[in-house]
Structures are given as structure tokens and as C-alpha cells.
Length: 343
Image 1 (spheres, rainbow, N blue to C red):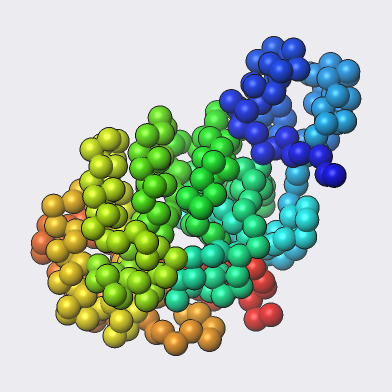
Image 2: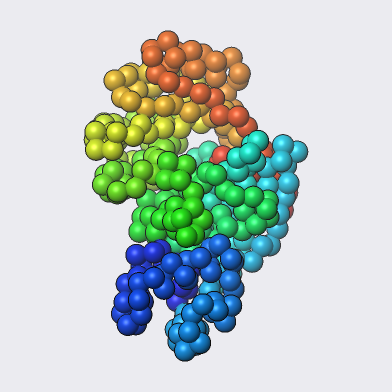
């Protein structure tokens, strides 16, 4: 049986672990810094721990470090990474530089079970959940490759974060911890397909993490067709959950809409989207659908994107159009599929 990965523990988990071992709680801070600031790959490197403690840790735990299998660079500077995990499973993550900012889009699962009709990830099926350490290691790996501090992190790679809730929250806490990756809570975003119980749990968390919801249509039949994995959470229940989320946190969620020609960019769809958003404190992020090999769908025209944008803006709903990044290496939203582009 393989040893557990100590990198999967957040500060609270490490403090419990060391307390059970009869060690002081500050050992958690030391180990966090060795793992995430100094990038230690062995316990022997942790020289401010007693030799006996290092030996005990080495006997009980391993330190997981994903192997970089492939790295591709877009013409716009975006970089896509394919990582192999300890059991052979693979995941992708993306680094997006913009001025003095570096955003990392990381995966929470290997593959995805949501089955969204326009997304490449679901086509490869679901393999398994990732640990908190496997998530945080993607972000740390991208930071090393850019030789830069990560300013923003988004759980918007492969997988549904709220289908792996506990590990995802532990990863967010590692990313946020000042003795680990030190990313501000408001600069860490979770993007969910709309799993209502997850949104309700997220609203009760003490940190000021940011919530984004993949909406894609405010017409129930269209959304069910595009996003079969969340059919059991109808739009009315989703809207109620988002209103409760704002009431509990005071933080405005983002609604993401990938615009698909003749599917969710029609006049009826636009009217329904405006009606759904009216009265809700939300920001709508419009995403012209990125091309996916073998998909029957095509992106909405610039004219239709502008029509959706103006309809929402005229209704007083804050709206933006996401700038496309990394599409030439299949690193844009909906394009991740656990393999090198063209393979």
C-alpha cells in the first residue's frame, strides 16, 4: 500500500497530525514552508525538523510531485501543462500571464463526469478525484516555470470542483496560506457547473473565496441538453442558492455563458438570460465558445455576442466578454482534454 501524501494536508490537517504525534503545532508552518515555498521533495531537506521527526515522517508519508509530461506555449504567452500523477493519471493546467499578473487555471479531477456537450474534458471520461496536494502542486509548478508569483488561481481546469468538495477546499486553503502559496482569498475562484449543495456549503466557509457558476443557458431545456450532469439542480433552485450565497457572504458570483451559435444566442435565449439575472447581484462573463475537435457546435458570431452584451448591459446587469487566451494550443475554456494538442 502506498504511503499518504503529506502535501495533501492544509494547515489545519497538519496541525492535527502533529498534535497526534505529540509535536508542537508550529511544525505545520515549518512543513508548509518546506513544501510550498522552498519546494522540498524529501523530508531530509527539512533541516529545521529534528532528525528523528524527519525519519518518522519519511516512514509514514511521501511527498507528491507531479511529473511534467508536456508544456506548450501559445502565441499570446499562455502556457499549457500536462502533468502525470503518481498513479499514472494525467491532468492539465494553464498559466496565463497578463502584465504583472499570473493566473493559473488548475484541475480538480482527472477527467470529468458532468458531460457538458461543448466541453472537451468530459469526452475523455472521468478517472478520479485529485487530492489537495495534487491541485496545489499544479499551481506551484506553473509558478516555478514562469519564475513568478501566482496572483490569481481558478479551479476551472478539468473536473467539477464541488464534486470533490473537501479536497478542493483544502487546496484553496493551501493556495491562500501565507506560509504556502500566499494567494489572496478574493483572487482564488471556484468555477462550478451549478451543484447547489456545494454552493450552499461554500457560502458558509469563512474565507472570502470567489464563486463562478457555469450557466450557459437560462432556458431549462437548453441547459439540460448542454449540461446533463446538473439536470437535478433546476434553474429556479440555482437562482435561490445564488441569492442565499450573496445574502450570506456579500460577495457577488460570476455567471459564465459560453455562447454557441443558434443554441444559446437566439433572441429567446437572450430574453431568458436577462430575466434570470434581473434582480440578482451578479457579473455575467460571456465566452464565445472555443473550438473543440469533433464538436457539433460552433461559436456565436461577433454580432450575436454584441447583442447579448448590449441586452444585459441595457438591463443594468454588469457584463464582460472574456478575452480568448491560448486557443491555438487548446488551452482555452472547454478545450482541456488530458493530451498534447494535435495528439
